[in-house]
Image (cartoon, rainbow, N blue to C red):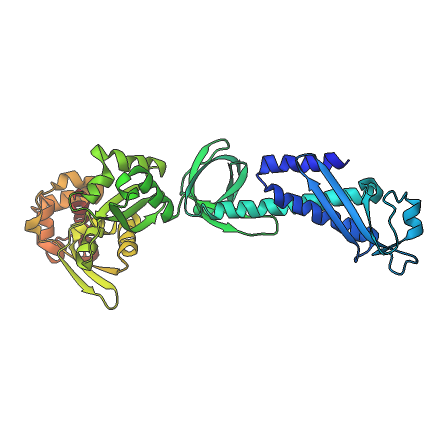
Length: 415
């Protein structure tokens, strides 16, 4: 029984990487509790653990007396003599007795095993917490072993990591057995052990991918200044070079886009705009709202607000699909951006559109009426305006406005 206990915990030393001295100290403490239960709280004892030999030895030390007053610390000379007294000890001397583990009884030994297991689990939890705390903010690679409704469980070095739904990339599909990369975002202590939260949606994950794929960023030659991201949809990253000879954006994109495409693939084809950072907020905002072209930009640095004026055909580019471009620009720059739409002068349109090609949008009947009233192209209708179109017998003000709006939208789509 003695050696089997130590051997089981020696196995933990090898498998779990526990410190041998720490484990030995726990064994001493647990068996010390057994001694106190059997011999009293004041008992003077020593537990010796030899992890290499697989030994646990317990020694109880008591004072030899004629008549015992405190059985926890004293033993009578008669009892010593009954035990053999091979060293011919006398009253007043210390009697050291080796206690066999079997004397504690099977129930107490099993209780000691349970206590030891509990203490080992606590140490393991602390080791895991410390290990992953040191890895906070780093990318890990693991295997998905369970896909649940609200999260995904990932195996990393035999430890469980959690990828919550809120930290997943929208529209990504995960399957059991898949290998996955994510950044360690948070480590929480709980009664059941540390919960290690990983993320693919956090800005830090994108930053770490840039460091992996772009050596100049890892080496500090190029610095990532800001990141704005809607995971799985689009991201904007502003960068700055600390070496005038190196183009920051060009280095991030790579030859034929090879570097940025590697990151895009990892993020399930999330579009990434890389722009040059500027200390000048006007320049920075202009770069952030690209590719839209603007006519004017008014800035209030104190209130962190900005008003952008753009032609009507540029507004859709400025706003982006579902508003993503302007939202990311606001996040990236820290400025609240308002848009003023200006109707583009008709003579500025480079290409005209024949009305006959707009039958689907306007309806064949409307197109025929316009043509019969000598309006053959879209620009001719826009130039006439609502009032002139209202003069046509078949159109009232609402219909005229609807026709103008539909035609204007066609020019925006053309852009």
